[in-house]
Length: 397
Image (cartoon, rainbow, N blue to C red; front, top):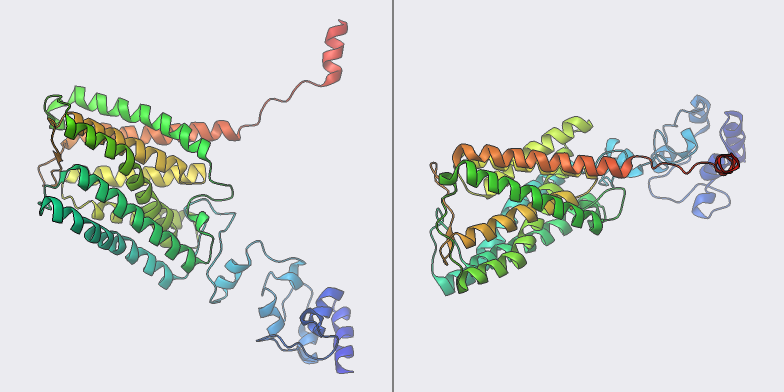
């Protein structure tokens, strides 16, 4: 009897019969009596009397069925229900938000984002320590400030970065409660054709940037005479195999995981993008273990450009393609000019090409412009065919 009066009161308030049915408990398979759902209670008649159309009741029904903006206030669930739960202090992490661009499309609670931000450099370091133990057993200890890019070192870098990327992908997807594919693209499937197009375009621009740098400041490159031997060929082979894995792994780590994790600290899109870009750049520079100011500046610009590529294209394809093209071509050039030996990385303050890095920074910006032009061409409306009547009229003339 009390339930019947409650239903009549609901209908009198202008709510739909579906809302009344929910409160009667039929949503849980009951035909009468209070619902049995966890955390759900039937609203009392004094509470019902306070309701107005478009305003949610202060009872458990509102909390269970979406809160403000839920099905009983707007007639439909919000576009991202898990985001609504997070904003209300719920325990569920957010799912990808279609209205936000790639990079800040995943939101998670702050303590979870901290786990991701700490785990990325730690897991990468641990993976490198474990895998490089085998390199040390074979080649002996190496100078950490001047590591030699031997064939085994190149292979170890690729395997350790790829392993770390797999672990971080699974961890981030688990903490954010999203599919793992969300770290690679947003609002569309991963596009392998897009990856190939960007790989070709980035390779051309990287080759131009490297050539200009060598012509303008040849002393800054620190390379010797061209000499190709067995060691050189082996380094080139492993560069083609392992460096793409290392480059793609770094993009997954620092752009696919770090940027969304850091951006989760801000609700505003611009603030989230800016903070994610800063944190990603800082961590990306730290893991390269260099104190050379120009090289650190280049790493920060490189990281910012790859974040922008993701914002423009809606995925990691452009950033991965650029990173792969940059590292592979640089690795091949270093191998060719290293005199049939292993190239040595200088990480001191006075090492590196110095101001010539500005040329490579401009090359990074050029790749961003290329991505923007290609994406704009993809989204521009195609010309429609002339109407059939118009063509017939022209033929008659």
